[in-house]
Image (cartoon, rainbow, N blue to C red):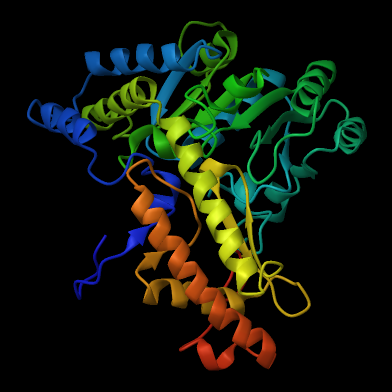
Length: 390
């Protein structure tokens, strides 16, 4: 990518992980153009919506029905609403070790950015730790008959412990709650069928987005037919206001999703993402170690979804050191809020990135030796997303 002054950058984490094929992928943009020439939004459903649903369910065979919308928050909130309607229970149990599920009250009220959200709403959301079945069972026992669903990312920075996801499946069944996998990140990057396809554990509901549209606005709620049907008309229960979105079925976004799925399956994109990420992770670790900061610049996560931690002299997470590292990467032509790769990257891009990381780590070492990164910040430090005050 290029900035307004014409400086060129290799970009990582493109579009908050949504652009996994690279910007303006030709097969995706061509599919979008064909639909734009025919109109993008109609008063009645387009046949493209049916075709997109059929394609999605062929790609994610663990799901029986799918409903499309525009963003991840709408999809996860729809899953929560279905779970509450089906179970008649008020509480939502979220995995506390995963950073984001929705901008809606049931989740965002649990963060420091909870202004405008009644405490009574937030009190209905409880939390469980990732990888700890005993703690989750204790939570379900404490709120016996009150928890509508367990919602979590099936995997992100760490692989699920052996038997963990299957154990959650059993707990949800035994306690009568709905198991929801948030596959916004893991969808396609873990496998074409998401983490559920890779690990072989089927949730009741799951949500997909990000990579699904390669930057175009489309997300999906998918899952068991009997649950999904409660969001429609073919049942005798009280109706569920599942989703209402003027732009949810825009044909060009659905065309983009179908093109993305075709590219992934035909060109082995997931395998390429892993191969690129493995080379990048190995290079960054070697560069950091060679500059004596291997314990301070730490690469984490699955190869297709790499992030990095920046630690201070006492090995604590540090925003000032993160700022130093980000600025040195930018100076070398690398824009990397994470090291999440896209399949458009080349071996030369990876080599360039590793070289720039080495240069950044040399400065990082100087700051550690000085015990103060301030002289190298060139401005105020970056800050965490979730904070009460600006």
